[in-house]
Image (cartoon, rainbow, N blue to C red; front, side):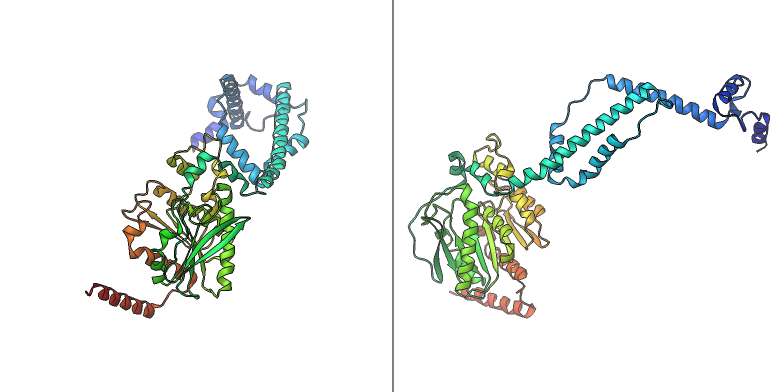
Length: 438
């Protein structure tokens, strides 16, 4: 403490010094006689700032002379796309650039050097250019988005090429067979001269109904043995055909698949109501039918109580590549296909996803993506161990139908209490014992 007091009292020239040019000259004259310890702190800080400023300028000049890195086009395109989809977050940046460029304070010659004035004008010009660019992007973005959303199914016409449809669709045209006991056929006209066949396996008019869209290589008679298993679980099972499949007329096309699915769903809903069916409606899709089920769930969410997907896909391009066609080389983007991963984010009704562990056609990551992207608060993913794309029922057995029934009852709010579940369990035990008795 005494050393500090002595050092401060050695010279009083650093205290109360004169400001301006005269003060700087007097301090320069006395710089050789003063000790470094008693140099005023403000003078040392000023010297440090000037020294650092010079170093920064040298560093900037050296960096300007280096070769610039190439622009990351994918990053730039992603940012521009985000700006066009939602321009409001960029309004602050736009306003700051424009206002700074137009109303920014001009450098005065009495205070700044010509080099600094030139640098200020360059900054103003750059900010003005950025403001103009942001203005153009914000003005053109919503207009482009509006034109692309006017026709949601028009982009699917790009996939109506013969090399694509022959891989996506495997239609088998057969004559109408006799429905099983308790089943009834329903024909729906979706266009002039085009009729879609459907078959309802009925349990009761008050029971929940599953409107089912099958895979690309299946027809209605393939589910004549599966339908009664749903009926045994207390569910109505309604199978929907596609154009050119079974006894349905027309030719299958990607551009008409989703439109037909929505039209058939509305017609079946009216038919069920007209015939006294009052149970909850569920839409279910398997493999290719998952695209129809998801699209119906998005467009008619108020009419259904839940969505069920079996062996469904999230991304169309990887699936098409497995089938043998590379849509990316044809200039078709994921947004121009079924786009299930984006659509399912709009589904808020309870969602149940079933998938085989060893599915090679539609790998498990597709189901995981659908589950992750789903917008439903109540969603469930069930993986069947040891099953592939076409063996879920064979591997899971009765548990397959029981799991679906439990989901339907929970989503529809008709799940039985513990007493009813106990009675059902005893009835199942009695039935199993009767089946084992010779």
